[in-house]
Image (cartoon, rainbow, N blue to C red; front, side, top):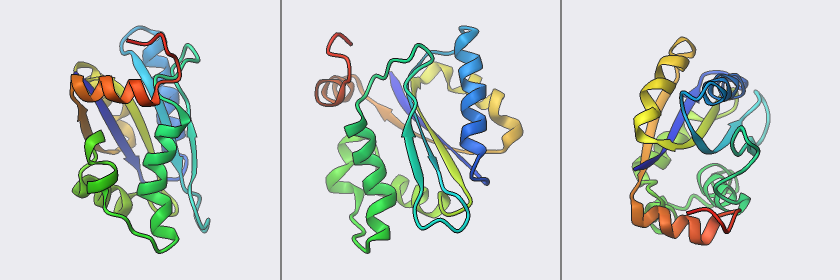
Length: 161
């Protein structure tokens, strides 16, 4: 089963630093990242900077539209005063209202988050590698039928399973 593994950091550059660690793990064959994205919110900035990374090979399992939906709903709509609960928009992606609320509280100016689409079995290796950065961790499990739906709607590569 795949999981959306979300790691939050107390600094605006924490996710970028963690991403480099994750990339090294993938290059060594310890983990396989299907997709990754970063939210970095500089102190004093009115909104976060978000970007999709993909994988070390330069491919991305999901399109920018997926990340735009997630980041727009979780981080940008509240800025506009349009606080939409996750239930209707993101629940089918594994993002419960509680998870969205936790991310909104945790990722604010001066903080950051790393989103990884990885196999559940590789989460402990990532946790060990990132332990020194003291991140908080959440997971949104992606069941096989959810994965098929996500990939059908949001896949960048039509050849992905």
